[in-house]
Length: 516
Image 1 (cartoon, rainbow, N blue to C red):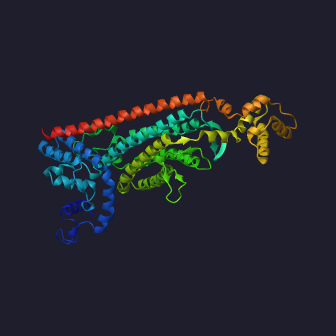
Image 2 (cartoon, helix red, strand yellow):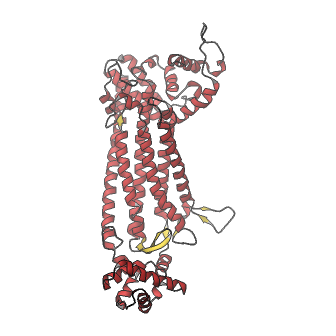
Image 3 (cartoon, one colour):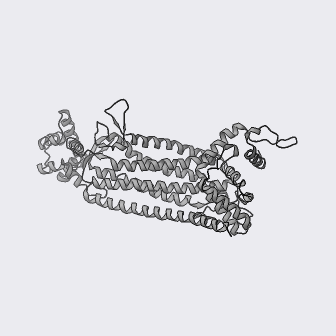
């Protein structure tokens, strides 16, 4: 349907509805009718439902557009004041605003509501297409939800750092392939998830900067004959800059794809911790226990305490990975196509909301969990996690190359497991026997060096290098993480204050113009 005909049909629907769907609206050989019922019930309904989240952003965009055109002398002051009063009333989402798919998308629903209250509604679309309102509103809403997501990640980062500090000396075996690897501390393990989170915040901050560029004032795809002060619009809406090219500003597919990428990267990082904790919470591992408030009891099995919060994190992450694929596919169209905004403008805000919930939940889980330190220490002492330390000690003390030392210790471990002995039950005589078989000569390693190599606490203390689990490098990393998180907290606070101030200033300016 030609745009003008569709526009007329939309306005007709607002007045008459689908009851007159088959009525004749004009005369002549080509009769205009309203949109098909099946179109309304599918495309219109989906588009409207997805756009409802953009309501606040679209109203701010409409207010700024009206203010700018009044200031430019395009809209007469009396008409502008009337339109602004109606927009300010609509900004509160009045109870009598009931959008329906029969009235089209959110823009036409809003326009119909305004038309019933002011004859000046015709100025709303001066110099712009409806997609300018939705595109600008989308960026405003995404901006807000990015800040909410950042806040939740900051909370999760704070929880990680605080619990890492609390457990900085609590010994455990690190795990690779779910097998005991080397001695570490639970604090060092937890802090390993703080660094990815800080990178997530770095990515999110950069994404926010790119998203917070104003598309407003672009007309349709190449500007407008009407004077559009795009810098003034950006100022009124709290944007940090402009999306320069008019057509690019209206039809960007990469922004939603990048947003989903940042969301998924952050959730995968959190989910990796959630996956570990779910395994650690099993009876077989028995290393962690979730707080009661983050667990769910089995309806049929009274002995079970299910780590439900962690299962939700995994499920939500998987769902959003699928959504990321959908957003990328929807963006892969010829330029200037509507596919992406019909679906993506609902999907991306929902994804950000869901991701914020996941990060908030993980913050609570981390804060509330308890670590079974006695079990972790006993398992470490009774296992073979110090095998690498013994091989490295042999290299340092005897000058033997590491690969040969590795073979000697490997033989020692194999023979100990065959007779059901632990590493700490092995003796220097056992090591000497293994060395004799490999080297055909004695291995001169002192008893003191042998005992220290098998001490998990000494093994952790020996890891003095940058990033290691020893107290000194761990303290340095805790300090670094706190400082970095503090910077992101400061950025978040200032940015939120700036956008809130811009919104308040816009509303104040609109009220001023209402009565001039």
